[in-house]
Image 1 (cartoon, one colour):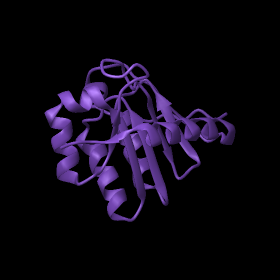
Image 2: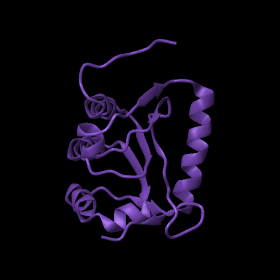
Image 3: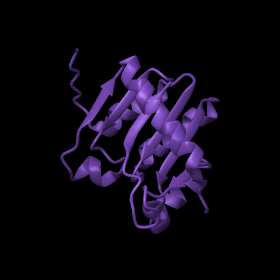
Image 4: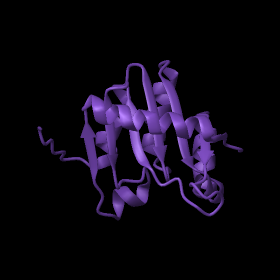
Length: 149
């Protein structure tokens, strides 16, 4: 397994991966308010890339800035509570790009995670691991509701 290091922050590494997408981007994250990453996804959508996002419903509903970012970028998304409904968390932090790149770790896609926290992000290309995450994403997508603006 090759270990890659980045001189830039995690957001820049993610932005590069998102801008290189050729077919699809599936994202399931607890929090998402990083304008750079929203811009990268909006750009991918404009290039015709299929975008599917699932965010934690509690965090989405309580964050006016997140709702405004996604509305301005015209990115549709779905929201999901955790396993026990309101108050429980959809706490995932992963993305699948083109069905062959998986990014996962502690990193929330937020400015706070980028500027204040110690975070980690793994970039994996293992087909068996990808398949498990894709199965989880498909379940979340099917069980999630469209976000209300």
